[in-house]
Image (cartoon, rainbow, N blue to C red; front, side, top):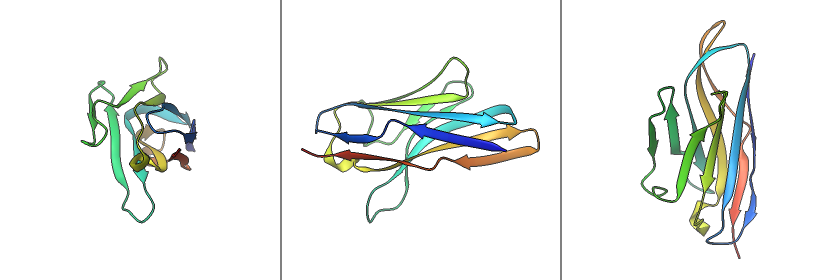
Amino acid sequence: QVQLVESGGGLVQPEGSLRLSCAASGSIFSINAMGWYRRAPGKERELVARISSGGFTNYADSVKGRFTISRGNDKNTIYLQMNSLKPEDTADYYCWASIRAMTGYVERWGQGTLVTVSS
């Protein structure tokens, strides 16, 4: 069983910063890619940032220059450093991973963490 556990959401004022973490655990052989998606109230889920096993990253245009995705030394943990937060960044943020597990290739989602940007 493969699980993703997120942490780090909360309430922050506009122009503030937050750091999200996501740790993958379980019967993992290797991780192909991990990333963050978000769903704002009344909107579709959208990609925020993703990082491949080779370290390549891609970002939504709306967060470029403000958000940074990175990996931990164990390669099973990712972080999303969010700076200069705006009210429109308010959303549930979900960790995603494409994993080669012992039983085959799987995709997993975290339970979500709420980020609220408000004064």
